Amino acid sequence: MSDNRFQAKRATRTEIPRPKKGEGQWALGYTEPLNKNEESKKNDDPLNVRDRILYTYSKRGFDSIDPADMRGRFRWFGLYTQRKPGIDGGKTAILDEEELDDRYFMMRVRSDGKLLSPAAVRTLGQIGIDFARDTADITDRQNIQYHWIDIENVPEIWSRLEEVGLHSTEACGDSPRPFLGSPVAGVAADEIIDGTSALREIESRYLGDPAFSNFPRKFKTALTGHPSHDVAPEINDIAFVGTVHPEHGPGFDVWVGGGLSTNPRLAEKLGVWVPIDEVADVWAGVAGIFRDYGYRRLRSRARLKFLVADWGKEKFREVLENEYLERQLVSNPSPESPLGHRDHVGIHDQKDGKKYVGLAPIAGRISGTHLVELAGVMERFAVEGARLTPYQKIVLIGVSPEVVEELVTELDAIGFSARPSNWRQNTMACTGIEFCKLAIVDTKDRARDLIASLESRFPELDASITVNVNGCPNACARTQVGDIGLKGQLVLDDDGNQVEGFQVHLGGATGLTANFGRKLRAHKVTSAGLDDYISALVVNYLADREEGETFSAWTARADEVLLRGEKSLDEVPA
Image 1 (cartoon, one colour):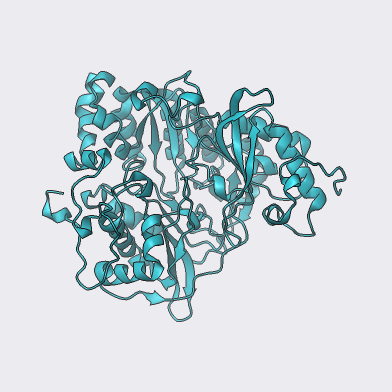
Image 2 (cartoon, rainbow, N blue to C red):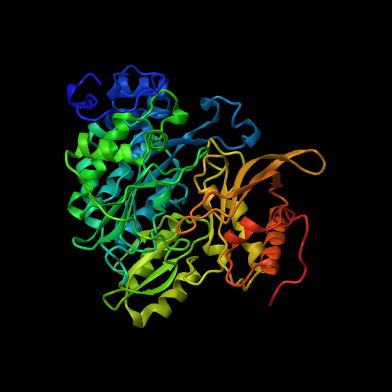
């Protein structure tokens, strides 16, 4: 804040709502840090930690790392200390952070909607094998996430990533987090507009820029030109959504202020039309508002959604236009939302006559070996590239129609299914207690076992039911917008013992019926009883649903005794 180039921009023409007490908003004169996170960022721009990693910490080892860097600024380069093994969920909220820290790091690698060449996929896999004990999970922000990273190996990892056009800059932290881009950008036959160039422009202009490296908290971006809204735009800080203006043609609407965690909120649709060559400018304007007017006093209120809720979308648009863009945006009705989401799993036509093939791992859990094997298959079948999806899936782009069936067979043999069961396709899980210091329960292994159980109980399910498994309240696997959202917590079993379990959210959704799942009062389920509970729930849905009724719609009207699984309807329609 001492450099005048980065002083908050003050409003000169627009009346700005002022809160009853100071919220740490720079543009209103509250420039003194109000918590330790803000103090740390003021003391040293987190982007500066890169050189210390390269030239000091990687050479001197873990014990040389300044705690302010390790538990703060490292995040701006995708690095978190991971959870020390053997610490149960009951101690998550009790122990200090340093007591939970292991001597290894989790690293997130951004993809930002990029088309990954076979060489890039192979590099990602080999990094997992060489440096991460063969880990390489796919996250729901289109990242590859490694574990067991030694600080000594970070420079070599970065070097390998850079050789294939990838990096971990600002993959975490109070920064422009990894962008979500349509996995089928540029190839889908029904695409409204290809937004790839806009994402690349935002990345080249603003990632690593000190003017945008100190937000009040994380800032999540999504962009899609596909009519399925395949990047969950409702729950991002800013989303650009493909639309058509009757005179100007294809462009993007702008949605702001979405987010989940403990205070979920759906984004506000501004109802505008932005041409593709102005997307980066609008992104910078919205990001600038968040930087300058975002709440910095309490971390729990430091997301953009709180500012949007207080201002309203009309005031937000006014400030964006008058103070940041210095021009008016073109008004245009927001595009209609689709029913449900699309993860692009399966075999689909491209507009150039080729196919794209969407693959489902199990709850995002893969390995470096899996990626190396995938790269080999891509090379043998001359696949153009791969994209990660916001649903922990992989889409292969540019597959020749004549090799599709042989390709699908080979992929299935190495753990990537193009024709998965409902349960494999529609179950997501966050990292969980295995590595995450915030988690309370296991998620990845639990999700894998749940999928296997439900596949055996409902092998021919004729409906789509999503299951989102989260290890804590932070909703990294989107608890509140799944058909069945499971929020990890400690619960009491029938004998009064404290065990791993979940609070249940039912009927959440994005798209046309976007809403947050229904919580049943005092209803929790143990991890051990989860398979039976969900089975009872599905049996009741299949028996009680009306023709064409989705699971989400059914949960909104169903008798609570059926939703709790306390009563089972025995007769299930064939």
